Amino acid sequence: MLAIATLAARNRISRKIPQLLPLVGGSILMGTLLTLVYTNLLVIQPQVWYEPQYVIPLAGIVLGNAMNGAALAGERLASTLNSSQLEIETHLSLGATPQQAVAQYRKDAIKAGLIPTINTMMVVGIVTLPGIMTGQLLSGVNPLLAAAYQMLIMFMLAFATLVTTSLVTWGICQKFFNQAAQLMLW
Image 1 (cartoon, rainbow, N blue to C red):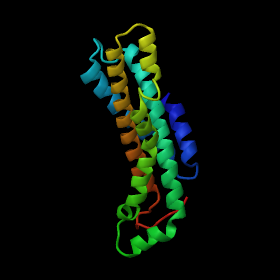
Image 2: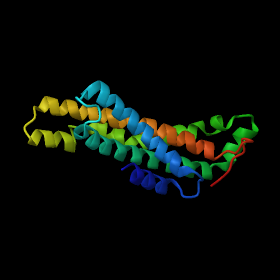
Image 3: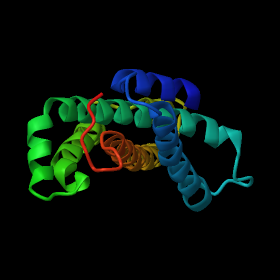
Image 4: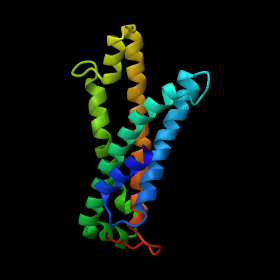
């Protein structure tokens, strides 16, 4: 699942940026792993921490969202950096560090990566009934328990997407500058 998610996200971002595949894969892995470890060990607390009944479906849901966030944020940042050469070089020539020169572009990219998740969180239960909640309701689970699980999943998705987009955008920013803090376009 991770390999396919990594390839799909990398292909949406760019094939020109060197070493982007491990960056995207590592970012998705970290966002997903942190989320699943926290959720399994501290919230769900199954008998065996790696219980497939919980790990497989949650990993699939979280990986899919992390992949989308990485693709949206990464593509936005890469295209913005490529089209903003003059502004970035102006910041650099005035003494800004590479991180300072691209800080606003990075924030905008992270925001773009989080928009689908935040929109879903705003209207869940009002406009849409997500699949997990619907499936639980159809199987006869208490509606309050189904809603609690859905809230947990929405927070998991938001956290995993935030971690993934933060790592992807940080890594892409690093790829656009050489050792001498000069902008390199891809």
